[in-house]
Length: 386
Ligand SMILES: *Cc1c(COP(=O)(O)O)cnc(C)c1O
Image (tube, rainbow, N blue to C red; front, side):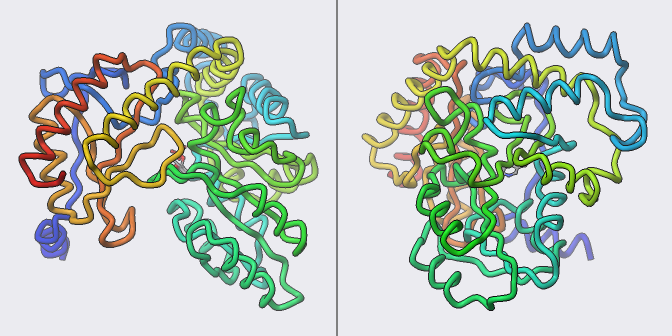
C-alpha cells in the first residue's frame, strides 16, 4: 500500500523527499559537501544563527538544563517561559500571551478553545494547514471564503445562523503567496457582526510594520480588536509558537487548550533565545531595513525577467509555474546552478498553482541576489518558463 501510493505521488511529480543540510540556516549552506545559496528559509532577519541569541540559549541550558521535565501545568513553567510571555505581550501591545511548542501546536490548540461544535468558523481559502487542522479538531462548522474576498466574507456573515458564535480566521502575510490580508476591513466586519478575529501572523511577526511588530502594526489596526497568533521559528529565529490577547483569554487557554496542557513545556533555551531575539529586533532596526532592501532588489530583478510573481507584498517571492513537473525541474536545475529554491506543489498550494517559493533574508548580500537572479534567468530560459 505504501509503495503504490508513493509510486503514484512520483508519477504525478508530487513525491516529497528530505534533503540533508550540514550547516546553519545562513545564506550559504552546505549540501553534500557543496556550497549552495539558500533562498528558502523563513529566518528573515538572520537571527537563527545570531551569536548573541546562541549565547542566550547556551546560558539558559547552563542555568535551567536542556529539557523542561514536565508540562507547563505540572512543573514545566520555568522563568524563561514567563519572561518570554511577558516580553511578547508587551511587544504586541496586549495584556497577555501564551507560548506553545510550535506554531502548529498553537493553532490546533487555540482554535478548539475558541470554537465549539455549535460555532461557525469562516476561514480564508489559503489558510495554513495548521489552521485548517485546528478548525477540524474544534468540530465547528467550517466555511471557507475566497482568498481576501471581503464581499464573500460579508455574505457568509450575513447568512449565518443567529445563535452560533463566529470565529473569522485569516493570515496576516500568506505563507505561500506572500500577499497581505485586508486586516482593517476584516476587523471592521468582525466588529460589525460580533465575531472573534484570529490572525495568524507567522510570516508578519518581525517583518511587517514600522517596528516589526507585525501585520497588525503595518495597518495600524487596534491590537485589542483581534487575537494574534505567531511563531517563534521564523523571523524570531528560535522555535515555538504563541498567541496574544486579553488576560482572560489566556487564562481560558491554560485551562482548555489540549496542545498546551498535554505536552511537555518547550525547552527553556528556546524561550530564552526568543526573548533575546525580541530585544535584538527592537534594538537593531537596520536588520529589517536590510531585509526590505534585499526584497526590493530581488523583486525588481525577478519582475524584469518576465516571470509571473504572485501579488506579494512581503519577502516571500513566489514564481508561479503552474505545472508541478516544471516546478520540480526548475528547482533541480537551480540546485545544479548552486541556488536552493524549493518547488511547492499541491496539496500545500491549490492545483495548477505549483510554484518556486523564493524567500530572501537580511543576511543575503546583493551579490548573493545577483547570483540567484542569473541562475533564474538561465534556468527559466532553458526550460521555457520565461
Ligand atoms: C509556519 C507556519 C505555521 C506553523 O508554525 P511552526 O512554528 O513552524 O509550527 C503556522 N501558520 C503559518 C501561516 C505558518 O506559515
